[in-house]
Image (cartoon, rainbow, N blue to C red; front, side, top):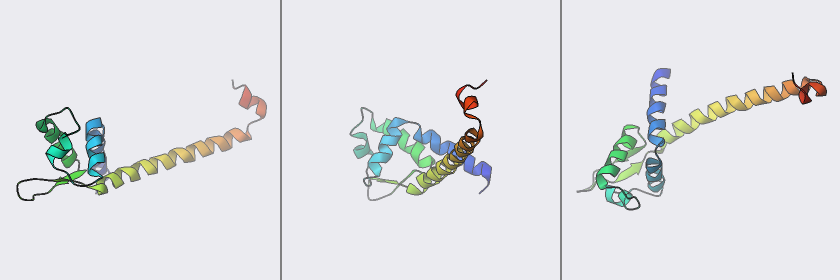
Length: 118
């Protein structure tokens, strides 16, 4: 997978996660599979609106839909969340390293320069 593909996947995933309704749906699915009707219950939204949110989540690879009899239960796909968490962790580490270097540099400055920068 190329860097551009990973970035495109991250863009799609972060866009899906940007909506609070979709995050709430993911939180509900973390407790177990659910149908569209079950996912729509806590929201003041139609099943059609919930279905649109589910399509966004499915396109991002965050959920999958099964086919059992006449229902299509939704299931959380944690692999994509792991990819996002890994990306965040790598960038968090970069910033921690930068702050550590800044702290080290600041500690080498005379105390009067630290208190009264120009």
